[in-house]
Each structure stands twice: as structure tokens, then as C-alpha cells.
Length: 155
Image (cartoon, rainbow, N blue to C red):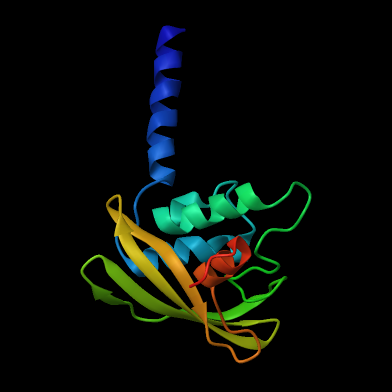
């Protein structure tokens, strides 16, 4: 019985670390991040994809939003819409400068072209999403500015 307990503990330890492995390349991060939009396997906790700074914005928004009300985000900023049906998904080549990177992600959502620019930082040995920018004419935004506006902070 003791051997089974030890084996189970080792499996969970290794499995847990496999799920939280850092992303060696920006494209690896973006591929893993978008995978649930194609197979429905959304994680309960997306913080593994976010930088410390971006996670702090999500946490602050949750803290200042009254219970039962919608927070700063009234749409999914990663698909530039409330719903999604993604086709023609492409990740552009990342521009990397030291511990910062940016890459464009393009796709069609319900047949409408979308283009998002991801700003990423290297933290904890891998790449994390730090901000998202949409220059789509019908809904331009910077994710960090949406959170700042909701928190009443001037940018």
C-alpha cells in the first residue's frame, strides 16, 4: 500500500509540473493558449499564461468588481468578441528583444478577420502574455487599458 501511495504522489508531482512547464518560445505559449479555443479544454486557471503584471490586473478587477456584476471585460479579448468560431489561425514570427517579445496572431472569428498583437515577457524561465492589443477598426483596445479604465486609473 505504501508503494502505491508513493507512486501516486510521484505521478501527481510530475504531472503537475508537466502542465506548468514554461514556454520556451513565444509561439509555444500562444499555441498552448489558443488550443482550448479549438478543443474546448479550457483550464480552470489561466494564470499560467499571464505575466505577474497581467495577472495582477485580473486579480484587481476581480477584487473591485461587486459580487454578481460584470468586471472590466464584457467580451473575450483573445478572440475580439463574445463568442468564437476560429478559422485560419496563424501566429506570426515573434520579435524578441532580451526578455520582451511581441507577435501577431491572425484568424477569422465567425468569418470576420481579426488581428491581435501579443506583448510577452520572459518570467519564471518561460514566456508569458503581458498585454494584448487590437487595432481592429471596429473595436480597438489594449487589454491593460481596459483594466485601468475600469479601476479608474489614468494611463
